[in-house]
Length: 470
Ligand SMILES: [Zn+2]
Image 1 (cartoon, rainbow, N blue to C red):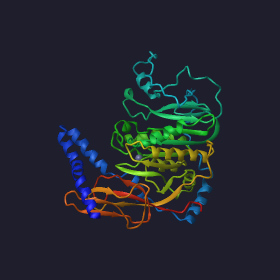
Image 2: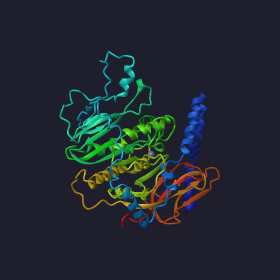
Image 3: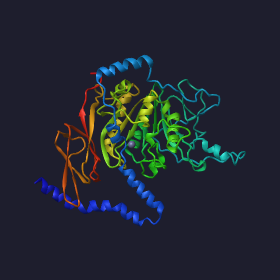
Image 4: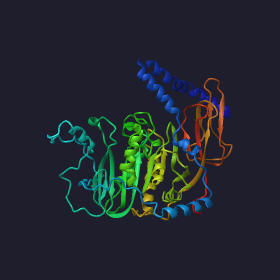
């Protein structure tokens, strides 16, 4: 019966599968010049790469026992009693030059098209080009700016002053492009009327991960600056060039999320990372870096958090109905670098790349709202009780054979040890290779049906772990 089902699905999918496998070869033949050949080849290689989705968990330090964590918490809190506050406040010592006040913009309203920088400065035409580009392109509109005495809670970011109780759009530029062609990355800021922590949200560090862009938009645009305590900084599309090309990577084919906190004189990726980290991230008390599954893998909405870090562990408790997967993080990841700098940080994973998924976006926005509520930044109506995240340890289960993957389970399904999760079918020999679960747990991430090779990480199984502090 089972075999019959598989046989049918093979005959159905055999042609499609072969087409998929042949496609790169076909486009390679089509490509007339070597440049396109290189491009196609490098795309193939990059698709076989594993990202934090897999790597992060596979190479993670195991979760430490509760006793160990408490011991650690003790020793760390002695050194840094207020580790929540950012240790370094860069470049604010040089406050000599007066800063421009950022325009108060209702983020719910549609933004005007960015205007070209006015060419009224006739004095320095030649060297002026470079100087002009050094400034963010979206300048404060003089007619909107109200000159006011600067209140104490004015927030300075990217060379602009954001007054309390206002929201605005700023522009960040890592200055790595040809100056005249430079494109700035929008940074949304809501500076609340009341004091509180600074929460940062970053999306699309991998340019093809779209759900995060929408999660940042909805979260930011729902905020009322008059009612907010603290600040929220949102960078919806960090990797703008990747986003424009539908690519996960930077133009130099590097993964930006392996280069934080970056360096001012390193590679392209190092410089972009350094610029973002210094100009924006270092101002945050809390950071949620939003990603999706990659390379045709999809994720249940979940946090990746270093549960061995007491501050991070406490931080995760604010995210309602979110799966929390322990992972110590890889060097160069934004969240690792942020934690290192004393910022409480997690990665939020939701859905798959190159798609906009309503369900996943809603879960992300809801969880961020519960986080802000938990930190008394906003107050929501109809919230009952404390947020309830669910904690998991996890393993990845890999395909042992190459072929076409067909799943029998779906995202969020509960599975038991030994249960068949899916099959890899060999389109040439007609062999069917079942993939079985190694544990009782829940499918918190999985590959979508596709052509795989042996060793491909296909199913991410989460097993419920103890709730921290209990
Ligand atoms: Zn990502």
